[in-house]
Image (cartoon, one colour):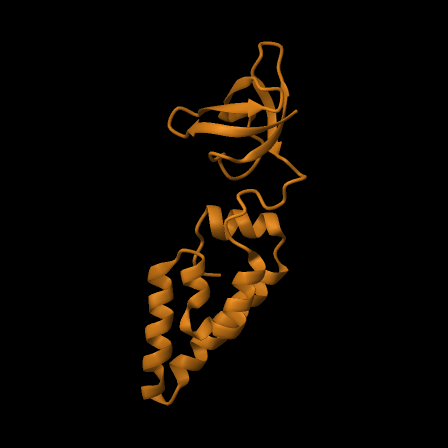
Length: 150
């Protein structure tokens, strides 16, 4: 059955899923079969156990872009064309890292441009990483888990 995570409490290891049938199903973390913990509004596929709880819960394979907040194509283009300025970091919500890249890139020209070149190479590598990850892997790594470097 398909459904949507309404709530999840990591400390208690419990949550609630709203099924497509209009019913709500409680679940425990032991039934979650993905690597990253569930979050509110995750679209999931699950079974209903005999006691009426959700079991065997996975992300819905039909929804590769789970939250739809950030696009890997946009992140790739920003990193490829404006990466030295850290624009892709700001887009992904990594403000501190974006500021670091921007400052090093701009002030790097004082030191014969070597720091600026290094930042540009880092941005290029990140653009390649973004584009070669699957949509789901990009979403989990850079949007949900806020991984800011490589």
